[in-house]
Length: 269
Image 1 (cartoon, helix red, strand yellow):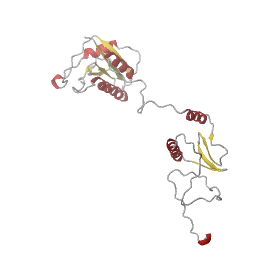
Image 2: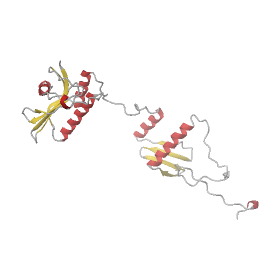
Image 3: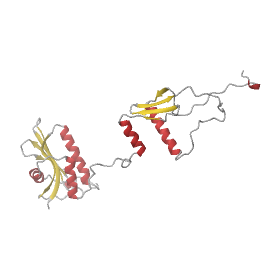
Image 4: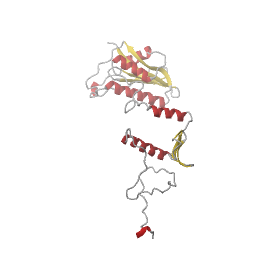
């Protein structure tokens, strides 16, 4: 019964050697070696394990590994490009326990027929294996696999708009009516208090982004207007002026400094 195989033949001019590797439908790897231009000598076939539920894909991984090892060892001359070929030669039946006395014998006729029928056009090894899988009825890996975690979700429209603005060299800033504000460009993030300001480090920007994302998750569609935090233990005087620093502390809140004790009648010691 005709069989389908996938394989390649590589040569090394420096060593004047050649190697042919062929994978069959039953998952047997046939390999032959010899001098360039001479009939190669078949090696002992590599049969899949008897308990392997997926012998062909596992052996195909070995085929890829052999191709990479041979190329790295100087077998860079492509004598027979990777190809999927349908042969007229019948493959030897594979024993249920293909080891010891039941191991598959070498099959030089199968290898030589592959070499004679393989097309000369170049083809990547993965493409040849994909064609082989299609013929023998094995699902192949997608050309563009989805990364772990699923397909990347599209950015929200506002984030997409901001990204385009920054990519074009624009700047995104807080409303000018606020005394405390921020300005973001592709080069960095800067906070300012009036005319003074301070740039954040990359780690501080990441911490700020995480904190803002957490706040937005905690306060969805919050209608409240922003208010200055007030501590019940140390109320702020209505006559107190603005803070003299414009630095934003990202991390645990710092405790307020203790107030000086007051004497009866409001006099300070």
